[in-house]
Image (cartoon, helix red, strand yellow):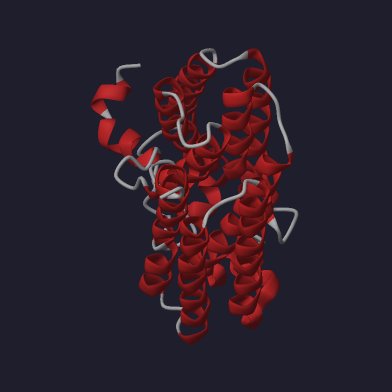
Amino acid sequence: MSFLWHKWPAVANLIRLDKQYGTLLLLFPTLWSLILASEGRPSLKHLIIFSIGAFLMRSAGCVMNDMADHTFDAKVDRTKNRPLASDQLSLWEALIVLGILLTASLITVLFLNRFAFFLSFAALFFAIIYPFAKRVTYLPQIVLGIAFSWGIILAWAAERNSLSLTPFLLLLANLCWATGYDTIYTLMDREDDLKIGLKSTAILFGKGTWLAVGVFYGLVVLFLTMVGQQSQMSFLYYSAIGGIGILFYYQSIQIRKSRQRARLFALFRSNIWVGFLVLTGLLLNYHLGSL
């Protein structure tokens, strides 16, 4: 295991240590669920567990994705310099990193109640199948959306030791959100994916991708509004939902105007503000909504 020290830059690149927007996109919906389930007062224990868990599972997902796609990544300009595609790391070394991350994740969920612990294995299942979904379906973003939404279910189960309609509405909202922003992300590789035979929503929807993304984003607003009605939210929450609606409209229009890689990546990263706005709306609702 000495390679962890000698090849640390490659290991850090493998888990995207310098690019934590993926961790935030995984963490924000989980925090939404924690705040809703606890009515604005999540425990410090759960905040720490799920923050660490988001980092570990997102890192593990990156490793699994690179292990599955290393031959494809070598043929794509954007990914050809990834550690496995460029032979900076071997598959065995990547497998060791993955084992460490999954072991740490398992230790983390052991601190949750039994219900949440058993539910956590579904997250691992979807994380494993996602890299292979793009070989057989034009909707791999749906699979990613489920993987990125399962923290919602775990957080609710951890706080309440049960499930209800609200976390599933939240899951549907995040599923549509993740499908939308990952479609924007895959637009960057659309031409390369066509050449090597990989599938994605960006290929499925073609010139109508901007409209499809807009529809997915519209469903996000719808489901989050239903969450608000289910949880009797105040106008502060709905103001935040209105704010993300504006951001969604802007993103959809921009991908219709331009598909330059740098522009698409900036639009993808702007979804961090979507997660932050919803989180802010929830916190303001519970702590200032009665004023």
